[in-house]
Image (cartoon, rainbow, N blue to C red; front, side, top):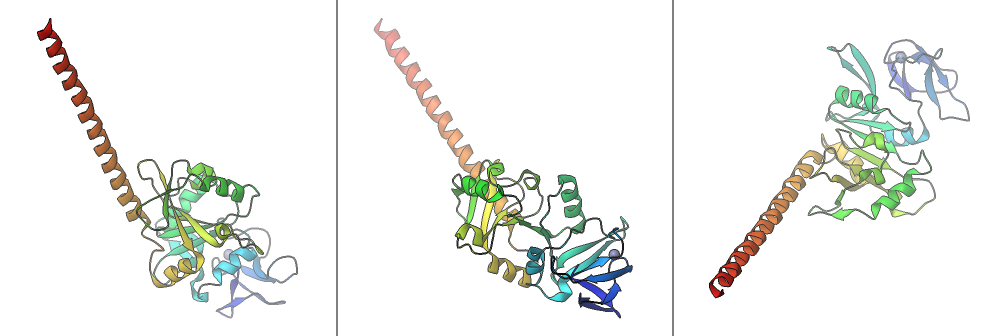
Length: 266
Ligand SMILES: [Zn+2]
């Protein structure tokens, strides 16, 4: 973790310092080596929060967009008797979890239920195949009436399977150093839910993501957009089906008339 309590104030790790975990109160030591970023670690191997994953440069860089007071916030659910550390919890009540490691869908669901108003930001550079798969999947995106919002019938062609059924927005971050590929520079959001069985995928600049998180309780109105697209698509499907029925009725009537004429002729 980035911050521990030293004399009851939050402090970043510096060599030789010791403190206490803001979650469990147990002693933590400053790890200030050259291999990994400077961080605090519990003495011994046990972690107080089983959801906590080792912090990477990627985590740290993201968290630093936000006020220190918003980083590594203890979230307590008295009903469940559970306590977890949110990577970021804004003053507007939005939890942002930055996920580098693979996550089992059951665990993902548990965290979504625990945090409520949350979004995921997923490191899309962990596996070699993640970005090439996404680029290939991009070809099947279809435009919608919303700017920067697209439909995709096979979202598994774009994103790793464990994220496909998320109930909250999942932002994929494919950025790597030394690349000017625009598809890596922007965030790609898989919206929760489906619009007539289509996944809804949004595009958002990372600056816009941070600005929205600083300003409001949601990054985007994902549920409303999905519902609106779903309603639009259902309506046009029903209209097409209606038109089809009318055409069939027209054929039937023509056939009947033609049959009537034949009958009269003979
Ligand atoms: Zn702890």
